[in-house]
Each structure stands twice: as C-alpha cells, then as structure tokens.
Length: 317
Image 1 (cartoon, rainbow, N blue to C red):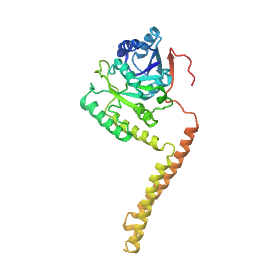
Image 2: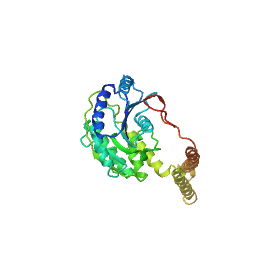
Image 3: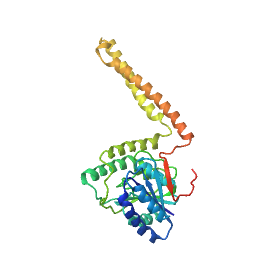
Image 4: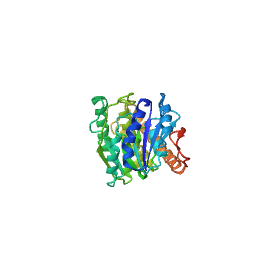
C-alpha cells in the first residue's frame, strides 16, 4: 500500500486541485493507496475543505492538529498514522507534481530505500530561495556525507522500515535520507517537476537556512555522540583545563624568572575563568549522560497533539 502524506497550513485554495491531481496519478497504478492530509492548525477554511473531501472519498484521511506545530511535526504525524509499506510525503501548495510519484516508485523498485526528489528547474526566487538552498544543500552534503542536490524537496519516497521509529524535531524532516543512510539504507535522487505557487504564499523566509544549519549540527552530534555526550563536553572541559594550567605555569614563569607581578598580567584571571569553565562543562557532560540514559530507558513522548481524525480505525500506540 502507498501512503501519501501532506502537511497543510492555510492551503484551502489548493486542496481540491491537489486531490484531483493525486487521483489522476495514483489510480492508474492499480495498487491500494491512502492520502493523509495533516491540517497543521490552519486558520483559514482548510479544515472544512478537508472534511468535505474526506466525506466523499474514504481513501482520504485527515489529521487535525490542535495548533500550528510546523512542517516537521505535521510530517511526523502523517508518518506515524500511515499504514502503507511505502510512504511518500509531499507539499500541499501544488508546487510538487503527483505525476512524479510513479517515477519515484520505479526508482524505489531498483532496490533503493529512499528516493529523493530534486527540483532541478526550481520555480522560486533565484536569490531569495534558490541561492540559499544551494548553499544549505552543499553544506549538508559535506557534513553528512550524503550527496543530494535538494534536501529541501518534500517529494520523496521511503520504505516504511527506514522511517519507522525516527523522531523528528525542528526542521529535521529534510534529514530523513541522512538517518536512512547512516542506518545502512540505499539513498538516491531523481529530477522532479516543480511548479510556481498559484495560490497563497510561502511560509518560509531566509531565516530558515540558519535553522537548517543548526539542526544539521544537532543531527551530527546525535549521530556521533548521542550515547556518549561526555566525550564532547569532557573534550571541551579538558581543553579549558589545559589553557588554565598553561596560563598558570606561564604566570609563575613571569613571576619567578622575569620578576613580573601577577597583578600586572591578566593571566591569574584567565586561570580562574578557564578552570571554572572546565569544571562546569565537565559537570554538564555528566548531567547529559544521566539525561541520555533517562531518555533511552523511558517512553518517548510525541512532538504533537492530535485534536481529531477522520477515516482512521483505532490505532494502537
């Protein structure tokens, strides 16, 4: 079964046309499918439009979140409630084309676990959207080791087992291919169509690139040190101790050999500050170790709250 998951925020004008496009692309495949719309706290008539479509088409399922949690949490909700063995997320603004779904599936059948869309001919502002995106994609590829041209494209195809158990926060939905690669999955990409936005407006600005970079740092940290945070904090603490002892030794040298008083240099202050910082960072590392163990040994909590659902059977959590 295919599960198409679509986060929505104030996209009332696009939903009906998107539903029609999806049916034209999915019905010829002759395989069961479900379309999961996640209403991420929309303030327009998105909820009413979704209710009408779900009432007429039982293959359409709706998740209404209590408030606006952001694209990543909405996408996580869609993945959690999806019942298909292949999950295909996409945007709800009509810029992704459902006609590319069969091509994603064909590529997936070649043995890949993730097929990522690449908006090769992107229809967005060249300097406001395209240039920052290219910079971010280059940085992410260098840091992660996963060479993709377009991490920001929501249109991707995942085998269910590579996203099962993945928890997403911040802007981390774009990093699912990295999770899959680090777990041994095969990842590739294909060019997909990209249309200009017809209705509504983009919800994202240039500030998103900074969020993405910070999230990438978190991803790298979690990959390398999530089970041993003391290595990071302890390493910084050790550097601080070295600076402290080196400064103290140099201050003694100046005092005993050169006859320069302690109060004539900033070295005593540097010794105290770096030593205190080293102790503090090391203790934070020990605290992180305790938190890490608590995290892995306790039940994980969801990053979203669901207000109600449509056309879903009872799901065991």
